[in-house]
Image (cartoon, rainbow, N blue to C red; front, side, top):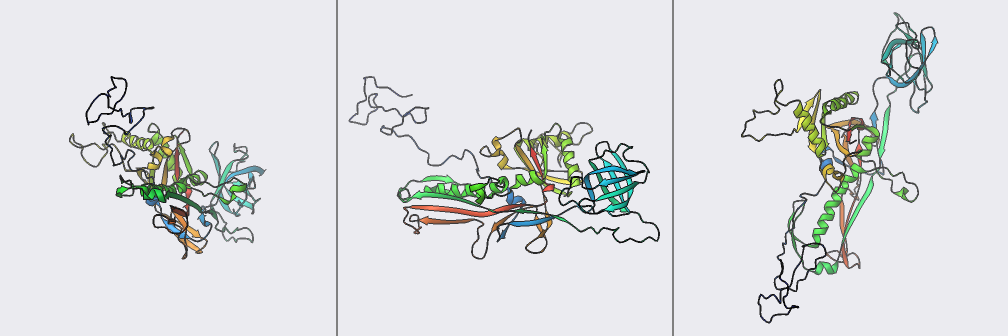
Length: 477
């Protein structure tokens, strides 16, 4: 609370005396609309050190935990992924071919790349996923090719149509073959199955940033004691902003690999093709789990396991989750290990009243899978996805651990790579993984007549998401 002049005006005193006529009010920080003045007897105490109210503000680190970085020299990276080993077709149609035989059209929709490779005397299973009907039979006639069909004689000698099989939307797969004694394979009866693969590609994008400070500002002395997220501490002034620009750019290198999308805008933006990030790769080629909660967590999670069984069945997996989903996993695990009668107390030790109780789980095993979970700061930070919850919000991701085998088009051989890895442009002449350079005429740079120092940052990179069918993206509802 400040004094107010009692005699109508403020009159300077000739001596340093505390009078109500020479007291100037300083309203710094008191509220909106307050005015500040330093023409007063006692100046405010100013703290030189910054208050780190948001803690460590950097978000990178995710890709360093689960992937690797490797150079490349092209505008595009192409890799091929193996298809399934066994012969199976979904969405086939069937019609009675006379008697109890049925003609099954392998590719009724004429989808590109789908071709009939089932041979005569192959034994097949025909499934109707709608009503659960199934029938086993032997192939008596096969027409190969994209418009191929097979004629199946059911072993049960029944008409599939009269048995209730639908005309469309069936599944058929080969489980073996059946030949008579002393038989030979007639020319054309046996179709050679050539191994096929699916090809994917991604293109690097150029990420840039710049920080500029004028020469005049560099000549002004003004120091602030700081502590930066990269472990440095001490007194900085204009380089404080440069340091934060660098840290922000390093975060962009990872955020772009996570959030990137292909650019489908024609015209002037055609020169900015975009790149496929982690989220788009999983949404396009992976698995989506919506609305995971502790209440139905175990049932929902078992559904994820069943789906993983149909994919690569990779034993070890990492869970990177936001805070709420991480707590949902803890609640799910604690509810089945609550220590009540008939239950099992979680933990590897005997709890005592003097021991701090750990209510979180860093890993668990369910079925034949091991899961290791951790918080993903990127999904918790309020300046990024931490401020978004609810409908369609991204709440976590399941990433398979280890490596995968793919065919490298450049090397011409099978190679093993982490499921997630970054490719950056590099050659003997230029390494574009992370470049920084100074231009201008200040701060030690003497490259132009510009009276400033320009700090430039550049990187050219893309993310390779291999075997995305083994990834799971957790989304809100």
